[in-house]
Amino acid sequence: MTTRPHSAGRYAPSPSGRLHIGNLRTALIAYGLAVRSGRRFVMRVEDIDRVKEGAAADQLADLAALGITWQHPELYQSTRAEAHQQALAELTRRSLTYECYCSRKDILAAPTAPHTPPGSYPGTCRDISETERERARERLAAAGRSPSIRLRADTRSFTVTEQIVGVSPIAPEDATTSYTGVVDDFVLRRGDGVLAYNLVAVLDDAYQGVDQVCRGDDLFASAPRQAYLAAILGVTEPVYAHVPLVVNEEGARLAKRDGSVTLPQLIEAGWTTGDVIEWCATSLALPRVRTAEDFVAECSLSALRAACGPHVFAPPTP
Image (cartoon, rainbow, N blue to C red; front, side, top):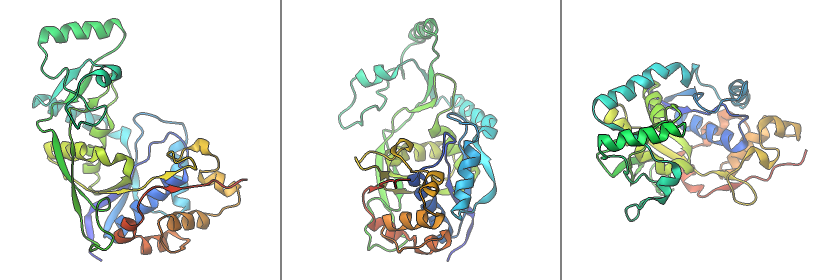
């Protein structure tokens, strides 16, 4: 196995509540891919927005209970606020940002270019005059709102490197494919002053040495935006590994309201941590392993490429 001491994979939950089995499965996969590729595995608590008291400690305890280990200490995103603000200020100094006065409703109602995904920003506020900006600021202030800040992108698309989606299961383990997706003038700071995920995640991945991002394939379309931002910030563009989601019996994304889906709930229903790991493994068509160590041994990219599509989780009855 090649050792990459300066490279890392990561898991980065938001501490908004307990992790469900789909989250735990993604964490196991991210851990497995990092360890198998000789990378460090790091943990980041993304605590700058939705935070529930005690949730971070609960999440870390659940991950440790499964046997996942990471380089300590874990990074709390809120401790990097000054660096995040400095990066935004630098982008502004380079004339790569502008204020936006649009609501979500305005954006959805605005005409967009053909083949542009719904919700992509059409550039409404990009080149308006200073007089128009002053009027827009006054209008927002009267409504108790503030403008957001968007990136002034100089491209409409960007290409990323993907390790799972679109790669043949019979391809070599180190095979990758390229995906070119839309880049719009995405938000860097929300109107409420909170810095956007796209900015802080890219900055913190670079800070932690992350060059492999494993996550759910619901975030696949956002990868080009994030890789483009990494490029203009002059930091490493990671390779991506997007994995299928775990869904409920109706085919919707699994949520905590779907029943016994968190580790404590599953244990209360009679499961063990070994049962959880075994379910995660078999949902990916891996052998019936019951420890994190054995999961890592089986969690190859080739196997993950063959596990196409979402997998249904039917919660046990307590």
